[in-house]
Amino acid sequence: AAPLVVARSTALAAKKGLLIRNRANFEEARKIQSVVFDKTGTLTEGEFGVTEIVTEQGYEKNDVLQVAASLESQSEHPIAKGIVEDAKKENVTLTDPEQFESMTGKGLKGTIDGKEVFIVSPGYVKDNNIEYQTEKFKELSEQGKTVVFVLIDNKLAGMIALADKIRESAERAISRLKEQNVESMMLTGDNAQVANWVAKKLNLDEVYAEVLPHEKADKIKEIKGNGLKIAMTGDGVNDAPALANADLGIAVGAGTDVAMETADVILVKSNPEDVVAIIDLSKATYKKMI
Ligand code: ADP
Ligand code: MG
Image (tube, rainbow, N blue to C red; front, side, top):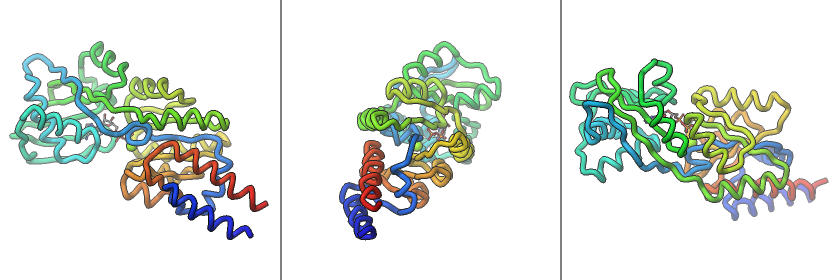
């Protein structure tokens, strides 16, 4: 009877939008004690809109937006899409970069009209001892906004604040996990203030912020080392190694191919609440087999 129950559960899961790619790990889902979520695109919509451009002396808002959007036009990051969209809205004309390079987890650099342009994370700015408007940065970050810094010819020209939306379904997912005594954690490359803002809104048990892409997988190992059985949920190329290291890797369906190829389960509807559905289904399926 057991294989029949399993086959039926696979069909049932597929109907609900849960694609099970690895049966053995799905069986373990009923024992998960902790779920680690990626932030951008998983707990949030992953759609950034520019809310504010703060310039340094000698720079106009639209000039900062022009170089930033020109460089970001070459990037697939959700931040890039938000900045390019804002330039369109403001009728700013973009220039093709003469040179372009992505610095994974830190930002971009390139050349626009002969000028050397960097768009980087707060972590990069701090590591390089670049002076910036700390109070303004703090104010924006504490509102949960993601801030990137624009440098032109090695001088800070301004910062761009972007807002993303928390998924309502994320709130429900986390409270339902809590009811089942499953902890929720967040892993993100974004800065600590933004991460804490989201964590507070969602009542998360643990937050790991400013984690570089190559460090995500190690972080999962470290958490597992505490003896926890964990699931990791993510959407990005950056998340794939972390998905592979978790006891159960869950990819969000709207995410990248790499994440989906690595995951044990794919959430077709990109709904974080479906993490709870997987755990429930695993419990129901394997209870019948004893
Ligand atoms: P996440 O874990 O949220 O997916 P990433 O690792 O992709 O984050 O990026 C971490 C940080 O690096 C971002 O919050 C941002 O500060 C910076 N960054 C990454 N890509 C870009 C980009 N295209 N433009 C500007 N900043 C970027
Ligand atoms: Mg992501």
